[in-house]
Length: 402
Length: 231
Ligand SMILES: Nc1ncnc2c1ncn2[C@@H]1O[C@H](COP(=O)(O)OP(=O)(O)OP(=O)(O)O)[C@@H](O)[C@H]1O
Ligand SMILES: [Mg+2]
Image (cartoon, rainbow over all chains, first blue to last red; front, top):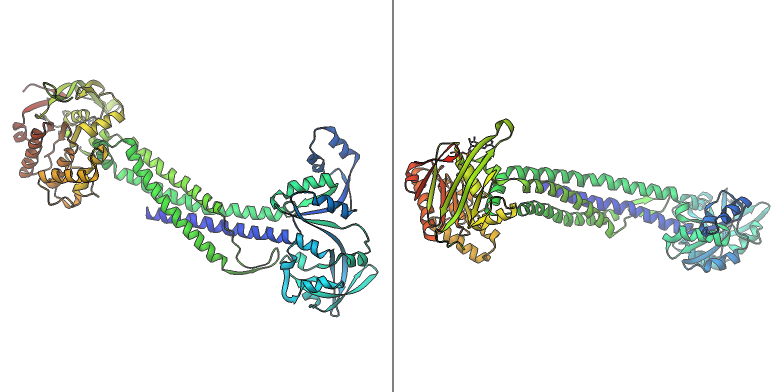
């Protein structure tokens, strides 16, 4: 019985810890992608082909989402033609908290040391801070956002790219796009932890980007931030149909990573649930043994006037007590280990940047762990309880007194 | 309700009981009729295997007859539901088995209190008082807190007698209550049972192989092959 109790405690505890970890990293990953590429990205104007229009018009009641759903039948035109109009339209969406127009283009960055290919992102700083965590991503002690704000020739360079080019704040760098060459000054370094970003992105002021890249109008894409990130897929669909531009939610963009996290979480839950299941089996075994060992006592209780349900209740109570203390112990263990793990140093770069284990505290981990333990424990108690209740006192006493 | 003119608290008529399955099916009781009165001690005697215990379990509502009827305080119980029979056991019947059958993990006091707990007529303090009183009457007043395992066989059987009396049942059924005890203890337990039954006006039905004990009962019913026979 104590073994089963210990098993339930460990089962619930580990369930909580593994869920806290896997969803901790997932949440952190989501925070990172929202803080870099935003919740929704509007890009590429599209024109419905005759075929797509026919398909959409075919059913008069078809919702506006259906138009957007048939992407294969569209003709895309690269970029956003009229960003001002789109921005105005986006601000009318109630869930939209920020909109930033971005002009993007490839450049060769040339420091005095060496050169490397990169991508410039022309932004309006105030707008872009509202759709990303750029402010928090500035590497401490390596320049400042204020410097960038006040200097038209300022750049924000990803830390990995800066390392390669051996650039620091205040250094000058030559950017070359096509035949155009201009000299800029590094205002600050930033680090998102996402290697694909830190290796290539250079932020500069929108106007500078327009003249360097010779894109006097339009935009490469528009980055959108939302109040409620979970509504992003629905909002994106609606934006597509209203704005006639492709709109991709973060869930769609990062689908494969998110699915990997989800798979990890489920497999951890299944693995750890086996601990609970095995403890349940152990408890079932113990209770079944008790029923066999105590048939005589059960018969005596029945002869005194204890009912079948009284007998069953004894075993249900045993299960409930194990469940109660298992839950209390499991929660304490789970919370304790989760806290301990969150203190563990673990530097990760690549898909995000963190220096400690990420954990996510959610009451649901505790609830789900308890529910699964309750199902297992109570099943393990109810079956022997019913068996005990079914015993006929006459048969037992006849059997033992001969 | 039990103060009938003839004060019959237990009555059975034409009881038949088969035991075993298929080939091994045995006609154990072949039409037994019987009455037990308040304040009277009845002994059932007979050779081993004649069906004495089987009859006692039927009378105690621990088992159901294949045919025939049982009345307890004028109420037909033989074919009532498990719940009704269980309630009747709690209220009207006290059992003493050949093997004392105490709850080993509990003290003598707790064992005696167990039927009272189920009946639920007394509060905790009253139950403890009554249990101490009963244990005192069976001569174990100083051993109330001993665990069942720390008592001798005779002492355990006396605790079982006290337990059978706990709810002041109108019927006490005892299956060879002294079968496991030496002469001195046998006499002690038997005297206790009969004395308390007389004092409280309870009907006692006991099975015994001991001729001395049978001799001292108010009535002796000899049994052979599942039937009562004339002496
Ligand atoms: N489960 C069973 N299946 C078949 N026959 C059984 C079963 N249980 C008991 N019997 C038979 O029923 C008969 C009566 O048994 P019972 O226990 O009532 O005898 P008894 O008079 O109490 O004997 P003893 O004095 O030895 O206790 C016996 O012949 C026994 O073999
Ligand atoms: Mg017998």
